[in-house]
Image 1 (tube, rainbow, N blue to C red):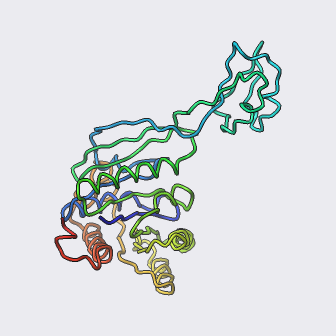
Image 2: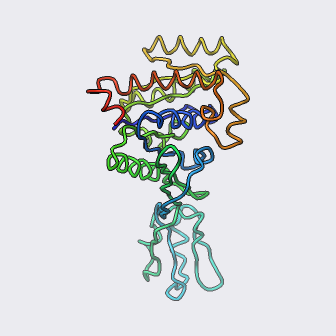
Image 3: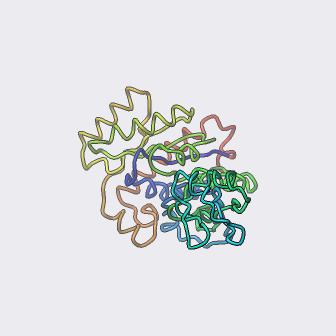
Length: 303
């Protein structure tokens, strides 16, 4: 089983559009499992129209809680709190859960042990069925942290199911940027597909994410989305990749049909047979050739 993670140095490059298209194309040739690792703003489900089969709570860190019947209003908790999360009431103190960082300073300093640390519900994760295969996705609640842990959980569940059912590919729609969630999404990946746009910051964005994947030893391929909007910038990206030995496996043209397909809830490759679909088919074939290079047989790729 191979793991392919789709990343970008910034948001809005069309990463999820390409992920949905690759899910459609790959599922026609092999059994796949998908994971939407962009838990802060998951949107792959908008295109795949999943049917939820399982729903689970995700606890991400702890929050302090003051027992009012035990509080003596000594004020020590407020003094040691660096985040101004402890608020004085009429007779007792209380904790603002949105401001609390879970550092437990108040818990350890309370002289009457009136404070306890409770697990905080930070989000939910789901297992769903789609027409292309199982999908694992999640929703991180607003203001919550530990998204890297939730990404790891979503990916782990996808990987375990892929191994159980004998899927050939775990396709991961990763988060944008280069932060902790990206590192979690990249962990254990056999290959990363880096989506870049031909913009002024295109090479810079690509260099950022390439530095991340190189640091963690994940081989990378590049696809240029909306490549024909600025041919000069697309060529600049291509030169950058050649100089660093990175292969450009696709140049996807701009077409408003992509937006039209997304509005209707379809991957563009399932919606139309136009130039964009042709380019994505070519991109998928190159990815498959490199990802499964060295497979013992065609049956191993398509099992």
